[in-house]
Amino acid sequence: MIIQINSHDALGKLSIVKNYLSVLQSDTSLTDSQKKYIGPAYQATEELIALIKELAMKAKNSQ
Image 1 (cartoon, rainbow, N blue to C red):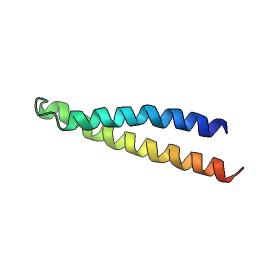
Image 2 (cartoon, helix red, strand yellow; image 1 turned 90 degrees about the horizontal axis):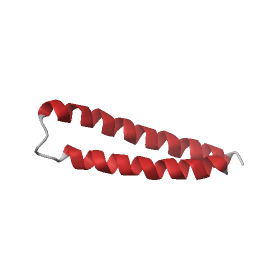
Image 3 (tube, rainbow, N blue to C red; image 1 turned 180 degrees about the vertical axis):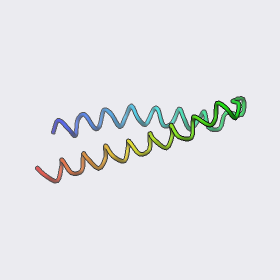
């Protein structure tokens, strides 16, 4: 139960980060040097979201 609550909170915050990074990716005022950091950050955020979802599912199934 605690894992599910914490994962829900974390997923909400990570979704905000992911959406903000998505907006930055489409920002035409950023330089290429700035944009090169956004892609990996976005990918890492997606991977973290997937990991948290997987852990929450495993915790739910083990109850």
